[in-house]
Image (cartoon, rainbow, N blue to C red; front, top):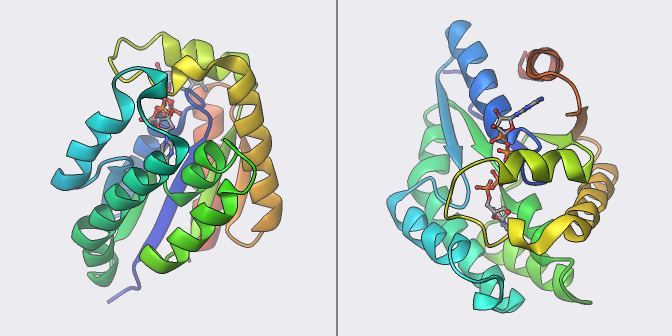
Length: 207
Ligand code: ADP
Ligand code: TYD
């Protein structure tokens, strides 16, 4: 049996992660590979319940510390119920957001929180993806795309453009910290051009 793989998509809101995760999964299925497409927060019934708590309601609903715990609780359930069983079965797991989102979104909220995120991750999650695509877009492109969606899940988009710019910079810093697994993709192009780049890199890494 082929070894399972774990691929994540990261980036700011509206950068195109969900679109590209879906296109990569279709591309790999077309090559006959067994793919599980999933997302965070969510990806298991328990984590989906936590998702609603996190993404709906006013921006100040949770402190950054409470958010870190909720995202990590959701991730732990997702890992136990969905991600690890699929990887053990030799499948390719493609996940729309994972721990890098907690490092960036919650880690930048206050001095010292990134260290909290990292230590909790080490104790409770302890797994990194084999490959992470960071889709990089100008903050206003992504935010405009995200806000054009009709959804009640607005808590994080309500933080505005300045926060998106900080998070973008944080993702680019993470890519430099972890060059072996992170690949930055220019997301300010049409969907097919972005998808072609991603399929090429995935093809090189999955052989
Ligand atoms: P994310 O998952 O990063 O929030 P989505 O994939 O949901 O982003 O895309 C947000 C919106 O922008 C969707 O309506 C999608 O169709 C559109 N979109 C995604 N990628 C592009 C692109 N490269 N160019 C133009 N529109 C895009
Ligand atoms: P998502 O549904 O991927 O939103 P989008 O499609 O707009 O990118 O994620 C919802 C929000 O949750 C998003 O604004 C980022 C935030 N988030 C965190 O703050 N920390 C996390 O660990 C995760 C997984 C998401």
